[in-house]
Length: 148
Image (cartoon, rainbow, N blue to C red; front, side, top):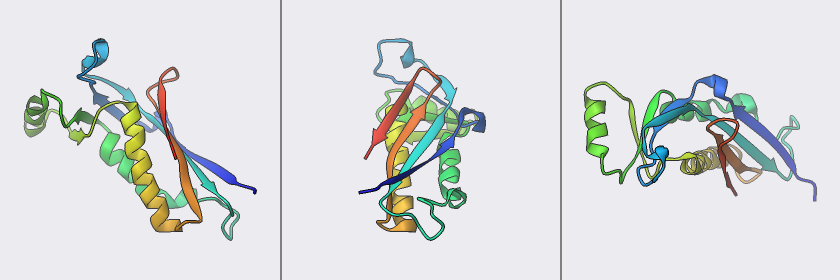
């Protein structure tokens, strides 16, 4: 069976700069730090559409909007972070733009993006195509992937 794949990348140059901390870490990752994150979505299909595409890249505006809403100049804090109330205070005082997440880190950011993009693709394309994987990169050396 022939399968087709395409990728859409929202690179570091897009400015999806997010700060977060992994409060459970014993290393310096327990401190608030940030990156201009990169997101790469891999789409799959068993058959192409009438234009011979897996997905219409131009039709992914909602995906980019979701990325900006959650990762563009945001501070992402885990819902179980013992200092969450302090971050909420910073939000109330206009110092940060807080996004509360299940857990912080590129693995969980990849999971979040996988869940959102999967629903978006299903809503727009039915079962003709799917999200094969989502890779999130902090920089050239660190990345995580969530795969179907």
